[in-house]
Length: 505
Image (tube, rainbow, N blue to C red; front, side, top):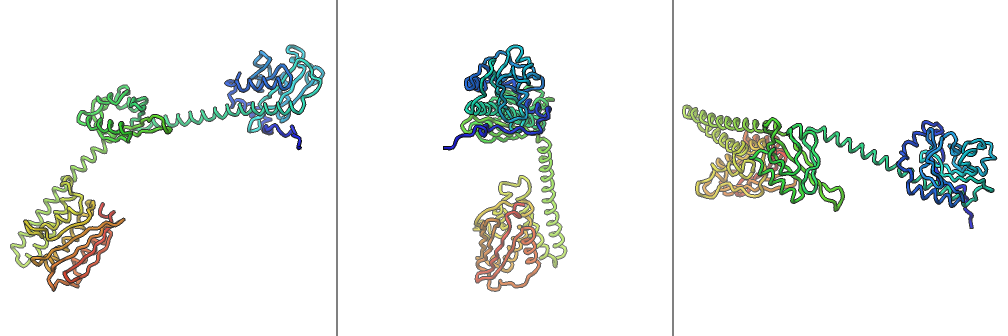
């Protein structure tokens, strides 16, 4: 059996030399804000047990401050402090081990100490140093008697006192950790509050019942009114034309615990209205806890007005472009009448311009429900090649895709060229011929296959003229794709691949 060595059982940090500097040591003591631990139940239980363990009537947890020795917990003593300069605990500073005086009256270090010569007439003292985690001497867990002891504490008592001292320092360190955690939380909350108060938006929060419990100062600055308490209190600040839509969306989002977003006109304190974007999210700090709502109201008035101006300008520009198409077509027709030898060219130019005009209908503002549709664009382009009341000669099928303004023009040029060539030499030049145009979707591309049926036997053309170069330029440039053609028994087959990203531009 191995005997336990009490000299190795304290578990207390060793004092560090840098804290022999009294200013640094006192700084560590201040970090505990120990006044909140006076008469702490845990420390009180420690001193009561220490007194019984050591057979002494008095026990204390002490801190050696600048001018006094403070008693955080005490047993058998009424005083809460003594002057620092007479404290026995001064002899424990910078030392890790128990300091014991069995007969103070006959010890030259203490014989003339007022605590020995005057009440309480200390005769016996044993103090286990309390050392902080960083190695600063704080004070002691000590026991005191008014009678001298015949012998020092035995090993069991010394070990027990060191264990109790370790429990006392753990309580002090827990207190300090709590203080630090609260300080960090307070700093974060302060930074968050400064940030929220500094943002240009109105920021707010509400409880699970939709009752508002916070608005930043921006509300007062914008509205000049006291913050609302419920959602209904917002009514007077929302334009009557937007009120129904905004509240319907809020009620739906609130009931479903989903994110809220709505644009509406908001009343300023001067009575004018501005467009704002209201947004809110439901948040639960922990699972099972009620939801809270956090939201903002962002001024989008300038952006909204800029968009309205842009749309107005786009409509005006679209109108002028249509007029330009009409003027150019009219001039070409007029010139052709005066110069019959140029009539074929004028007719071809007119068809190109008409095709571009139809493509433009699908990208100009408010042109109709299919203005961004690939299928709609293609079907409109091929209207001139059909016969009224009959099935279309060019049959478009397959997937649809969104198209942007930049893609409409090259698409119109490519398929106008294919249709024109077919009308001259291919399937559209015969009474029974037709074309199948099938669209398929891949991960990053749209693929279209142009297949002619019923072409005349002489339809195979091998030369690469201007039309082929135009298709090549449009497909590889603006549409970021490629194309291939081949001639089969019934006519031309063209496979075209274009990037989805290019179509959406």
